[in-house]
Image (cartoon, rainbow, N blue to C red; front, side):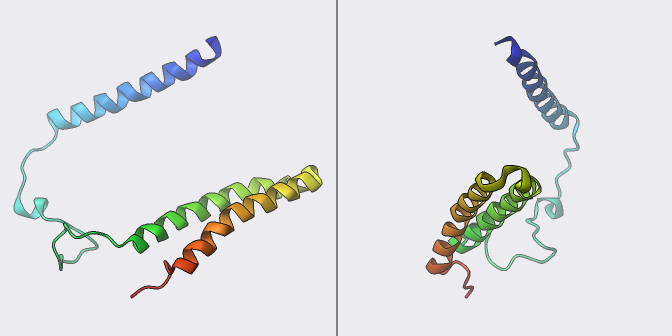
Length: 117
């Protein structure tokens, strides 16, 4: 347990800092709302439809796939650098990692998440 004390202290300080900054911003921040400031803004264009419309699932699926493959790229680089030291075990680990990420990719592809209408 003594090994975790610095981590717990750091977490407590981070939480206290986040709460303090939020409170200071709320108390001392400007409070002059105007219709222009309260208007929804997206990509610099006026809204076409009301903002209460549901997002298509394909949009969210594509976003999640982007995050998954971004993490894959960050995780494969160290594995590729250490491939000579890891030898066969590293290669098997790389194959398992790739299969775990490729199977959902093909599943989403078959479900039609990459076809836009």
